[in-house]
Length: 213
Image 1 (cartoon, rainbow, N blue to C red):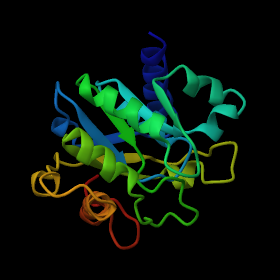
Image 2: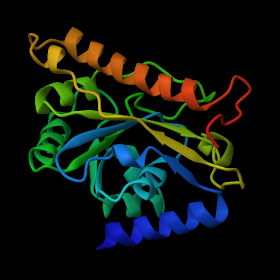
Image 3: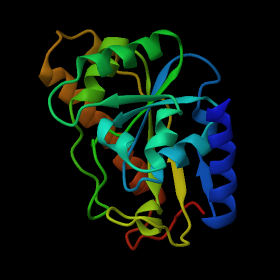
Image 4: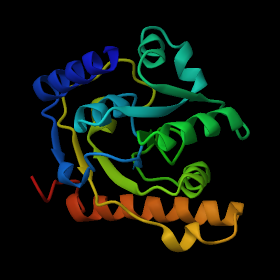
């Protein structure tokens, strides 16, 4: 119940305050497990993803965020899986796999943290490992505008259009048949980021102008 309150509050906020627009919603499966993987620019991003799909999302979130005033309280009550900032958090991985095993949706930011300069960063191996172990498809998504609306280091937002572009599901059948290894995990993660980069290239012009608006 609380999740859906957050979702509708997010929709209203982005529609009325930040000229929100979502593209590619038709690619979201109506049922079944999958991973929604997006670039990370701002604390606004989880709420933007929540507003972009009718499927309830379970977020992998840095445990440190849960200590923040108000925002931390919201995340604690919104299908959050906390993960330690350093080292491999086995409990977070197990909890993530349980979510996917139940046919639900896991949302994750492969870069692991918010960008400082709006550029895409290298993905961590964690998303590849979870995808490999769960054997589920991954939907890439590119978020644009949240860096301008509320960049890293800012506690308030400014009016700026935000957009999200959701791509087609990606299946890693070849990689899922390979031997389990960190290299395989990283290769899957890198491929996920490549698809996110392709969404950016397809929809955002060289000067940052939206090509599909």
